[in-house]
Amino acid sequence: MAKQIQAIRGMNDCLPNETPVWQKIEGTIKRVVASYGYSEIRMPLVEMTPLFCRAIGEVTDVVEKEMYTFEDRNGDSLTLRPEGTASCVRAGIEHGLLYNQEQRLWYIGPMFRHERPQKGRYRQFHQVGVEVFGLQGPDIDAELIMMTARLWRELGIADHVRLELNSIGSLEARANYRTALIAFLEQHIDVLDEDCKRRMYTNPLRVLDTKNADIQALLNDAPKLADYLDDESRDHFNGLCALLDAAGIAYTLNNRLVRGLDYYNRTVFEWVTESLGSQGTVCGGGRYDGLVEQLGGHATTSVGFAMGLERLVLLVQTVNQSIEIKNPVDIYVVSAGEGTLTAAMCLAENLRDLLPELNIMTHCGGGNFKKQFKRADKVGAQYALVLGESEIATGQVVLKNLHTSDQETLSQDAAVARLATLF
Image (cartoon, rainbow, N blue to C red; front, side, top):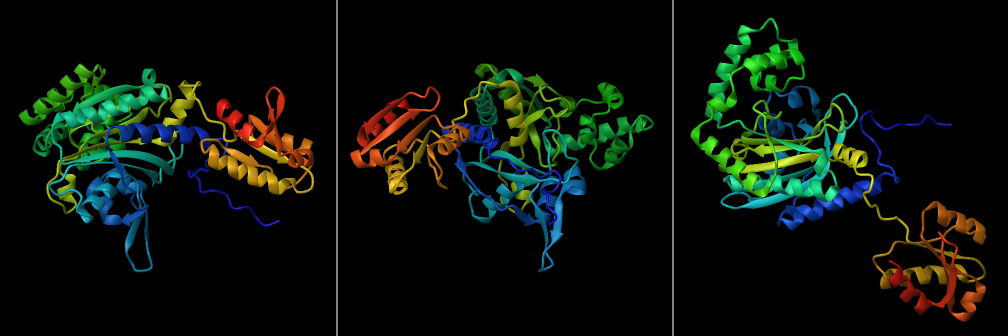
């Protein structure tokens, strides 16, 4: 026997018994996002490497350690996308979607990061992103947060997530804060671990979200970013908080929340949970008003968020046991006897025309009725339609409830009408 080839570590198959909950969650997301008037955009999985280096930042963990980068046969450096915002901005610039226009977009698809696989975090993961271009007020920031809050309610997890909120101000305000933070860290360099020492000069704001408990305690005495905010950023943030208060959305102010990518400014937010252990962030986003210009477009105000589906699926499965999943097979069509298979397949096709909302499976591969009913039970069908030679001769069909074993013999037209009342 030839040696089996297995999936790459951290890149997982989603098996048939797992996909229904994914489809349910994805369908809910698509419905909620569409209800706010957002349009879907689809981008390629592979981009030119400089796109992510310029957008995310050369000294971020994503660019330094986690990107899947390779050289193609033309000698170009290409990268499997590690996130969606940069690709969305690139597409908007390239196709003229952003200049002097308002755009509200969303996307869904796989992303790739070479990091240590663990619960809820994988090397190939699936992400939903929502991006808005051309709107600068706190109202659109609030709408995005309201959208996520609605989604949590729809998925039955609203009581298991909480919103953390911060403003990181303008580029100038952050530069002033950066100087003050470096000065503070230099005074306590003996306490810092190697990771924080490395970040102290290259990306000091990332020290604020360290997981090291000793350094977290030290940072209680560090300068506060809120004290360095410019007036416009402060007014913008106060306006956002007022809108969330009016909408009844609770939040916690977290002055250490900075997000992991360099392009953010002003509003940043995360929805976090305590129900998944150490992997607490379910959704995160914020403003990135300088990114479009940074990538070669005209200055365009922008805001968005992204959520990882693996983690969201895990949370829904953990806390919402009542989520309703549609059975993949409603009706199983069985047949035995001369000429019955052809009639069964034609009947199933007719039913798909007349009852398109139902999932109908026709038994293939032969076998007696016992074998066919066993297969119907295995796929979880609720009802069977039975065609034997006698049913063919009389133009009838047997409708059998596979849960109760009750059955009735009906004309094919009557069977269609009966099924329409059952589902």
